[in-house]
Length: 480
Ligand SMILES: Cc1cc2nc3c(=O)[nH]c(=O)nc-3n(C[C@H](O)[C@H](O)[C@H](O)COP(=O)(O)OP(=O)(O)OC[C@H]3O[C@@H](n4cnc5c(N)ncnc54)[C@H](O)[C@@H]3O)c2cc1C
Image (cartoon, rainbow, N blue to C red; front, side, top):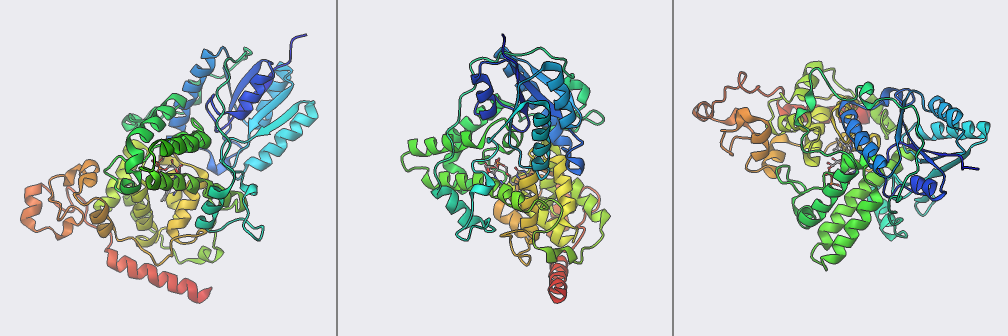
């Protein structure tokens, strides 16, 4: 008698290699139903934003091709996950559901419901790791508590037994032909207007991710430690969106980086360690999210819920559109809009500007990034916004307020990053590129800049804003 099929429910691991659930299913020799369910119901207000949907479309397209090359087929279904799974089990008489554990705040409840469905229908249910290097509950401090501070957390990870080595993709996938949605019918791509035209540097999917990792290790790992803070230098890996959708696993990155560091025989040790530490920031974000699932919505430090925020819809809009009059802030916000990504240093500067200069609640910025970043990730985004706001675990202290002019002068000294994304300032000399309001009239004229016309006047004076933010902090402390 032929074997009943096994459903592999794909979630945020849109790849064939290092996919433990898929490998285990293929090893049984049973036909494998590769199933992806597009479920906006369960995530509710955290359903994927626009730029992530663009990525998802292309990543699924690439996955379908890879599965087809192995002899299988990707089945697409839309709707509430448990109902969709129940329908596929009923249609196929599947014997089991295999899946990778999710780490979003709603994942645990969803997985319990999937388990209940499997028990009800007499189907085996198996859950695998694959999204993180370390499962959050395996990491505890000396008192058995979760870590709240990054440095001891990362020390624990470095000292722990090495993360699992990556598994190769199955040689072949015996598929099952099933009715599937057409990817295009999900309308994941923008149409009117098509704001994704500038996303040309991305190749979502497993092949693109592996290529990007290889290029990074060959060309940029050596300079990563020194150059990763300079937005106009291509020094970082650019792997975050691939990691978010699971085009690549953290284990593949970790072990490939370790091998590259070893091969360089001491030349890249420091730079390599800095890179591995950044990968561990992702783990730390998910460690926090696991133990404090309200992280995307509420401050980790509850007293910050009473911060005297301002209502500034005009300021928020100027920030979103890159029209604040602060060149480094505007360059970052336009980079985001044009390419779906923003350099980490500039994310910190723009976030600080929104929260501390404009006093707009951090959740507003978090939401904008959620919609516009191709790497929008519930763990990293929430933890990072809270870090900048000063209300997160192990956060930058609130009183540390980024000065957008000094940050620009330090990390974009020649102004080339600003020139790239704010072309109306391109002809300003570097002395004034981060503070055009200080440029003499003749310099502005020669550069073709008319403040208030070709480029906005500053929407706020940073020194005034800084004092106002510190007064807000004082008020918060007085009432706490
Ligand atoms: C306000 C703000 C919002 C952010 N939102 C997101 C987000 O939605 N998604 C996201 O992946 N990152 C987010 N980050 C973190 C960081 O900016 C990006 O991970 C990084 O810029 C991605 O570029 P890269 O892949 O070239 O990183 P690299 O420097 O090459 O780092 C390698 C990997 O480490 C991880 N990593 C690096 N820095 C961090 C960090 N601070 N926190 C968590 N993981 C990190 C990422 O997975 C990254 O791909 C945010 C940072 C800030 C300040």
